[in-house]
Image (cartoon, rainbow, N blue to C red):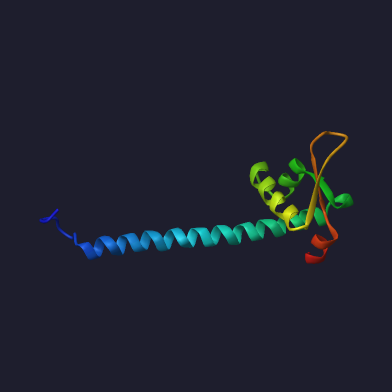
Length: 105
């Protein structure tokens, strides 16, 4: 590497720092996207009849795949913003916004 053009230890470290900065920016953007998605889930439930929807219908309503929607719902349930209960009619999860969640939207 000694004779390579454009190579120096400082340029190598500069590239590493740029990659790390870019990675941190993506994590930050991902967190803000999750916050936006959480708000969309709450809005979708607030606008639903009876303030509840089956998970699959909620995911469709907010244009999400079921997996990420489930992850967001699990987090929102942990915060007391929604309840997840089994739907006796279908056996699927029924997502319902709580009073606390209604207060945020």
